[in-house]
Length: 245
Image (cartoon, rainbow, N blue to C red):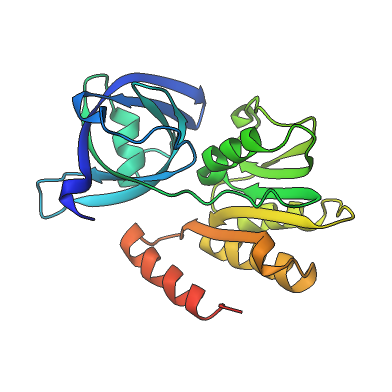
C-alpha cells in the first residue's frame, strides 16, 4: 500500500453495538478529501506504522457521514492485532488508514437474494441489505458468537434474517444453516464471506450444488484460522487462481 494513500485519523466515538462488536468512529483534518458515499468499501488499517513490525488489516466502512465514518470490529480479546487495538482503543487515539478501495456489492439484477457470512462479514452484509430494493426477497444467514450479538438490521421486509449462534471459526454451523435454508424459485444473486475453509464449502454449495451463475455469485474469505492477513492473502490468491471456472 502506498504510504501517500494513508490518512492519519482520530477516534471520536466508541460504541459497543453488541457484546462482541464494537463500533469506532474516525474523523480528523486528513478526512477532508476522503471520498463520500463509500459505505461498504474496504479500508486498510495500519498498526504500528513507523515500526518494522507494522501490521495491516482490512475492514469495511459500515456507515459514513460528511465528517466521519464508522468501522465495526469483532472483539475476541487480545488474540489478534486489530481486536487488541479495538479492545483498548480510547477517544483521541490515532490510526493510519489507507483507501478506500471499491467494495464488492451483491448483484441486484436478480429475482431473489442470498447473503451469508460470519461476524467479520456482518458490516458488509448490513450495507448490502440497506442497499437492496425495497421489494427484495430472499435470505441472510449470519453467524454470531452469542444470541446477544444479533443486531436490528435495516433490510427489506422480504429478506428473512437467520442468526446462527456458534463460536467464531466454527464453519460447520454456518454451512449447515446455509444448506438447510429454503431455496426459492427464480434467478438468485449470492453474496457470502467468512473464514477460508467455510468460504470453500460455501462456494462449493452455491456453484456445484445450486449451479449459481458466475456473474451472480460473490464468495470471499475474510480470514483464515491460525494465519495472519499477509499469509491469508497469498493462500486466498492461490485458491482463486485454482478456481477460475
